[in-house]
Length: 155
Image 1 (cartoon, rainbow, N blue to C red):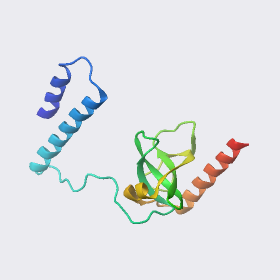
Image 2: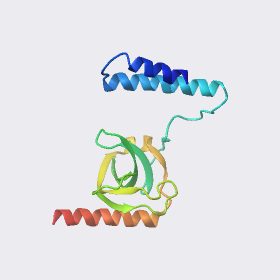
Image 3: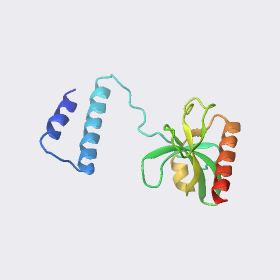
């Protein structure tokens, strides 16, 4: 596509680019390509968000949030206490901090769950709602494994 060729030409004009500059250029090209494909009837753009705002958040919900200011991840809600939502991070990479491999959810099958709980505000979680995890019994096993892991760590 012409937009990508133009981007590559532009990138070759400068030896180094800042993260912010690259992000802006790539977003611009992405929007241009999306607009072109949409106008040509090749794609139908219905929504740009992975999440939907809900009024309440519950145990077993899936949310999509940034972890400690980093890359966003899907997360499984463990508990809601007052204005805080406690959750476990779902990741596609198997690393040393994994406590469970997901088996019973079509979207996250063969994904992994981290060994810690994190928390965010209830408002942020409601704005980041995606759907409900498909297997509550598997989620209970995940939560039990994380709690056990945390207890073993504290010994």
